[in-house]
Every structure is written in structure tokens, then in C-alpha cells.
Image (cartoon, rainbow, N blue to C red; front, side, top):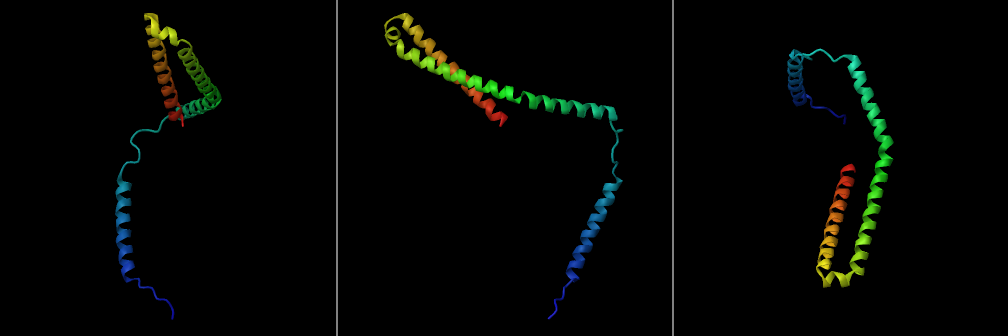
Length: 129
């Protein structure tokens, strides 16, 4: 048995859709395309050239930025190691005098600074990703 398409309901929907699109296109055609004059082509070329140069510069400096992050990471690890070493080697001074109290506060403050520096570094790494 051959397949017969029932086009009566589809034709009405197509007609409504065609009328809606036609009226929208007429409305769109009545709007002004661009009220201001187009920018100067020299300006557009200059801006494109500037953006191209910035892109090349960023690609060239990317290894330097990665190296800086590695250096900061190595510095943080070394500073934490030094802080731990100082904390373990100076327990007698830290508990016996006012100098020891100052030393304890100094080491604690240094630990806080190291943690803050590490947090800023991690935040910058996350922003770049």
C-alpha cells in the first residue's frame, strides 16, 4: 500500500509560519542598518595589527611567566623547609627568655606570610587556567 501524506494540517502551519517570517523580515528591513558611518579602514588595520602584536608578545613571554611561577614555588618550599628547621633547632631558646618569645612570634609570623604567599600563587595559577 503506497504511503499518502496528509498535508492539510501541515500546509496551514506552513502558511502561518511563512506569514510570521515574512512580517518579521519586513519589520527587520524597515530598521536602519547602521546610523553611524563605518570606521576608517586605517584605524581598523592599526587595531588589528596591535592585537596581533600583543598576541605574539604574550606567546613569547609565556615561558617566562611559567618560570617565575616555578621560582616562586621553589622559594616557598625552601622557606618552609628553613622555617621548620629553625623551629626544631631552637626549642631551648624559644621557651626560656623574652628573646625566645620574640623568636616564636617571628617564626609564626613568617609562617603566616608564607601561607599568604602560597595562597596568592595558587590563586594566580587558577586564574590563568
